[in-house]
Image (cartoon, rainbow, N blue to C red; front, side, top):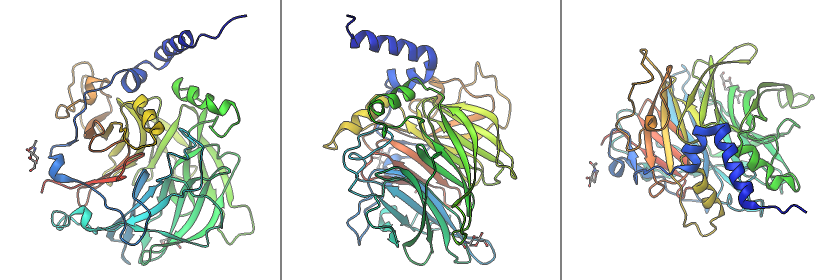
Amino acid sequence: MPTFRPLTFVSVLVAWLIYKNGLSVKNSILIKSPLPEGYYYGGNFTTQCTNLPNPADSDDLVKYCEDVTFWDLHDQSGKLSERRVILSCDPGRKQWNTVMGPLRDPEPLGTLFWYAPKYTKENVRRIAPDSVKPEKIVFKGYPEGHTFHPLGVDIYPSFGGNASNLYVVNHAKERTVIEQFVLSPNKPVATYIRTLSSPYFVAPNSLALTSPDSFYVTNDHLITRRWPIIGHFVPLLESLLALPLAFVLHITLNPPSSSKDAIQSLQIVEKLMPFPNGVSVSPSGKEVAIVSTTMNSAFIYNRDLTTNLLELKSQVQVPFSADNILYDDDSNLILAGHPNFPQLTKVVADEKDQVVAPSWVVEISPRKEAINVKTYQEDTLAPVSVHSKVSPSPDYAVKTLFQSDGSVFSTSCTGMRDTVSSVFYISGLYADPGVMVCRPQL
Ligand SMILES: *[C@@H]1O[C@H](CO)[C@@H](O)[C@H](O)[C@H]1NC(C)=O
Ligand SMILES: *[C@@H]1O[C@H](CO)[C@@H](O)[C@H](O)[C@H]1NC(C)=O
């Protein structure tokens, strides 16, 4: 009878991985980069970056935050009057994580917060980020007993004080769904509208609105940890082998008042992708960026404004397991991720909250002039430069905005920049405190 030899199995597996997905495996699995304690682009991390405090009037903690997004409030004339931040945090993530495991206890619930520092170009040096406390967003009409484990979140801008549609991916106990709420700018109370569910929501992770009632949503895996027996190892293999099994959807909804199904139409806009994670729509709406975590890459697409279909334009590689991506106002992309995947899995397994994992956030911007990819040096300010690890893209410049070995900020998963005030936000999947704010040179 043949015996199962774990070591042989592992070495064959590693050899196969390197063959299939070489550079990504090398950069985010095998090699540990000598990252600094904390580096903030062109500045001083110690003086410019601060953790967000917990709310004043609630026991819920700003801890383990998977996503952050801007909520733009425009006045009657359509002018941007305030840029609020929505936080999606889940302090119970070490008990319940359908992407990385474990699936132990779904009861401790996650929380949404808003953070309203009212930063402008003029006041940004006067208002310390921790002098303003995030406020918990209380749910009205949320179904009793329905568990809440928020991941990706997006909200439509508000105009002249009107309420906004807010959508959040919820890794609920039974299955992963998308919750729809309405949130008005004058009170942190989100009114529950409905729960969106579909056989095509295999493993929703991140979403990006294309109107108040439509959005792109990524499914990070085809086989999930929720499956009996094979759920213990197939999702890991799917990730490690970068198996191109998962897909990205565009969803259009019927109005809540309609008697028809909530989902009016559903299109698969990208298929056979390994571990699609973050998704973002550019300010003009004409471009979409989708991250493949296990390919360490952002894929940039042209978007057809009427059909929502995507046409691949470019792939940009980074030296980490890429997580969430967001366009800023100038159509540059901010991409965050995990430079050492094995270390991230140690954080997941560490119940005492003593282990940290590194963070890396980059900006991806269209090149203004052609370069010679063989000789070009860029990102030279960073302690570990992007291009010491991957060759430069001919189309996009990649620049490090933030780096940490995990000691000052652990497990970065979303980076976001307000180009008006030059404030930069980072959220950490297993960071406590869960969100860091960096201001321009004081
Ligand atoms: C950053 O600021 C701190 C505190 O003022 C100072 O001690 C440190 O030397 C500065 N670091 C750099 C690299 O300028
Ligand atoms: C708020 O106003 C905008 C612009 O008129 C509109 O697109 C949006 O649907 C409104 N929001 C709600 C929740 O009615």
